[in-house]
Structure formats: C-alpha cells, structure tokens
Length: 173
Image 1 (cartoon, one colour):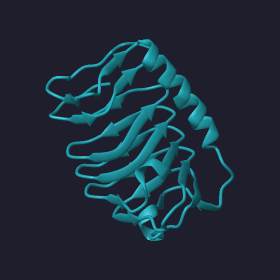
Image 2: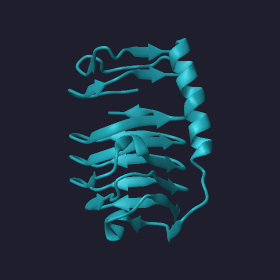
Image 3: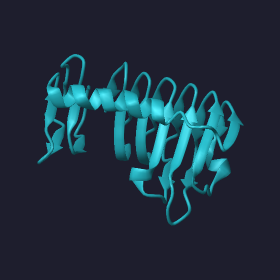
Image 4: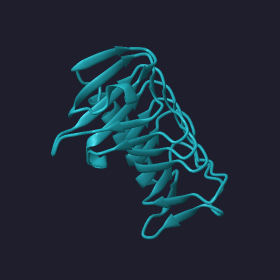
C-alpha cells in the first residue's frame, strides 16, 4: 500500500504477503483501525479476499460490451452486471431498490472519470469484481467493495465508501 497525501482510512489497512506500507503518515488510520503488515490478520483477510473474488463470479443477469459506460445505464436495480472487458463511469451511476445486492464484473478494468459518482444502494451490498485493475478518477465519489485481481488506484480527492482489496498488486492512494 502506497499513500502520497493526506488520506484518511476508517478501518484496518492490511498487506499480505509482504509488508510494504508507505505514506502513513501523512495518511492517517482512524482508531480503532490499525495497520496489519504481514501479520495473521492480513493473511486471513487475503484468504477471504481470494474466496470472495471467486464467489463473486456469479452468472450474469446483464452483459455488455467492453468499454460500457455505467452512467448510460443508470438507474440500476440489484443484479449481476457484466462487461466483456472494461467498465467505465463518466458521470453518475444511481443504484435503486430498497434491498438487494449489486455485483459488477469486468473481465479487465474499471475506470472512473474525474468527478464521477455512484449513489444509492448500501455500500455493503455493492461489489466490484475487476479482472485486472481499477482506477478511481480525481474527486470521484464511489461506493462498494472493489476486489481487483491486480491493482487499485484512488487518485487525488477520490472517496471510497467501501473497501479496496487487491489480490496481486498494489493499492495506491
């Protein structure tokens, strides 16, 4: 995990395998959150991350071509949304419905443009299964749990109400 600014993490931050966590401070972890570098908590979290990544490989309710802009589909009800390549977001994605789970599966990347947002839905019930890497653009307001096979980057001013879980690469804040 690498941080280059005044990032605030509410909850735990972990790395496994390896132990490289840089940029805290100036970044802060809000108590009772802690940094777990190559400890048992981080190892268990990485096993859970791998299991969740596999579990999220659910059959698709809706399938789109690569490069699908999610803002064009808004609003969306709970379901499993799949891209045969990448998902993009260049505006607002509204999630509707009083209850349910949203799963977004891209076989490659997830990229948001600056100022993009995801609104609605309980962040605990929004899942992003990314086949390679995810990048949240400057000042994006994003919700849900991002599980990326490779890496996750949150650029300057990006806000994630959820988790950023990378299996094989870095999380850069």
